[in-house]
Amino acid sequence: MASRMGLVQGDLVGGKRHFSSVLKHAYLQDVTVETISAAIRKAGIFPLDRKAVDSTMLVPAPNPLVRSGIIPEGLAHILQAPQFNRSPEKATSSTCNSHHE
Image (cartoon, rainbow, N blue to C red; front, side, top):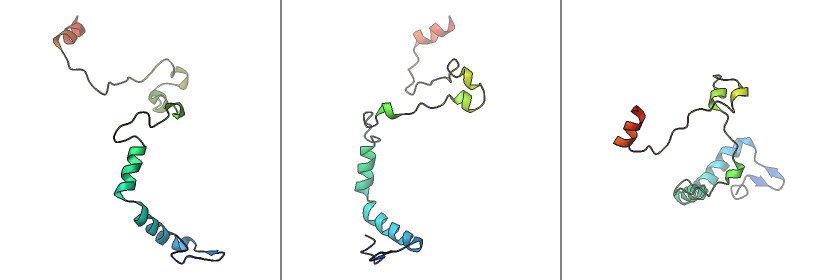
């Protein structure tokens, strides 16, 4: 691509001064609706594909209570931040009554 734009002549390569024009040229050619859609699909973002990411490669997040300085790191395995259910249950009379007993 750089050679097509005249930025490469033999062993001479265009430097920092020409970087933005080379980047713009590549961006305009390669960043399309199709490539963005393909990247989102490949990443498993949409449609959601939980198998797209190898979970064995994930690094556990640090305990937020330690990170914010609320507890020392030695207590991180004992005290955990509350986990919130992302799909809340519908409250029914039986679940409401069980909390008040």
